[in-house]
Amino acid sequence: MSTLLSVSIALLAGLMMTRAFKPFKLPSVTAYLIAGVLIGPYCLGALGVEGLGFKSHDAVEALALVSDVALGFIAFSIGNEFRMSDLKKTGKQAFVIGVFQALVATLFVDLALFGLHLVMPDKLTVPQVITLGAIATATAPAATLMVVRQYKANGPLTKLLLPIVALDDAVGLIVFAVSFGIA
Image (cartoon, rainbow, N blue to C red; front, top):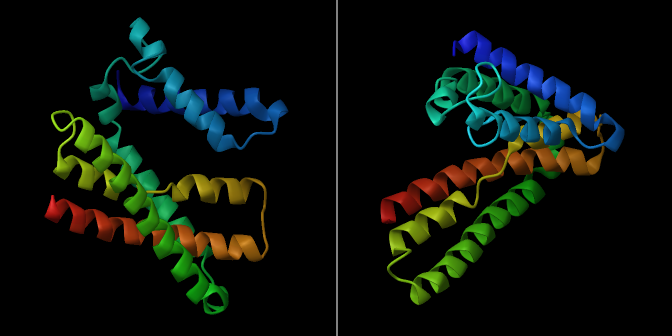
């Protein structure tokens, strides 16, 4: 399937799902996620009908450049939302919450998976436990930003939320790099 057709199918599926979910008053990002699952290789793509979905992971991976460009725009949008005056007001609080959330998520996942490793050492190795714990810090800044923009949310929580999400991802990258080095 050509890249242009693949992108068109993905966009059309996302648009159709947002229209279908409008009566339920759910965030559009929920509709996009469901559309992605439906046109993916395990639902409609598994039927093998040309133009109905992505038949394989290779077809999805062919859109890696499109995905990277979209993530670049999302990162730019998040950076564009920052205001120096807001950062001065929420900087310390956002820093503490963002770092605490990332480290606690890593710790809890590491502890739970290490317990699982003790029960089934042949299924889950310590390096896998450490790596999965680091992956647990990841959040979805795109989804957060989309919901904030869709509902035109503005207020103290929103001003605190965006720096936390951005900081959480930065901490997640550092934790992943350190954990991957240890593992």
